[in-house]
Image (cartoon, rainbow, N blue to C red; front, top):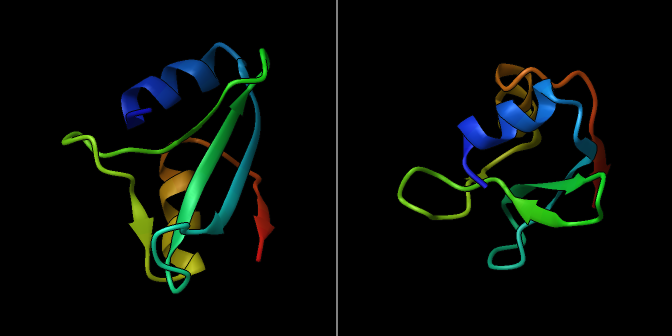
Length: 76
């Protein structure tokens, strides 16, 4: 799901949980996984439909902060 879609869901309080996990494609990178209240899960994707990945946890946390989130679970 793209950033603007995530922001809209957050404002409507439809995001149940946010997790930062190792990328399935590259274990040295991190991706953000969102879960909606209805149980659907999805990754944060860029405007060109690629999964957003981050080289370190700080970058992933900064992105979540920019999207308006205050907490996330980190799974390593």
